[in-house]
Amino acid sequence: MGSFEASEETVKFLCERLLDKTQPISERFRALFSLRNLRGQFPRDALILATRDPSNLLAHEAAFALGQMQDAEAIPALESVLNDLCLHPIVRHEAAEALG
Image 1 (cartoon, rainbow, N blue to C red):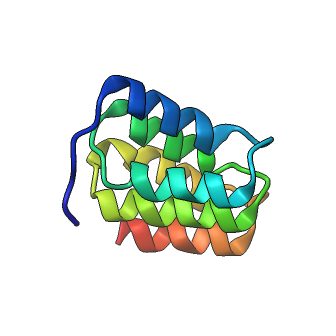
Image 2 (cartoon, rainbow, N blue to C red):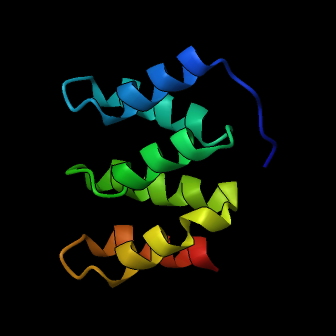
């Protein structure tokens, strides 16, 4: 998957939009799909936080996006998701897929 560059302000906006539970889910998904194409700590950390979102669908997609990013720094977080029996099985499954 290719990566793109974005301004610091854009990255911050996308991270905040993804994690803002007051936003419509469609807007949060738009942010997620944009962040998966960016590299760096802030997009990665926002996606990691999103794997714990109350929306299992969003959390699942966040794990999927982390796998697409192929960022080794996300491995410990994905392992944590995989091993957390409190999370929905679909989220844990996607973390396993992301880990390979």
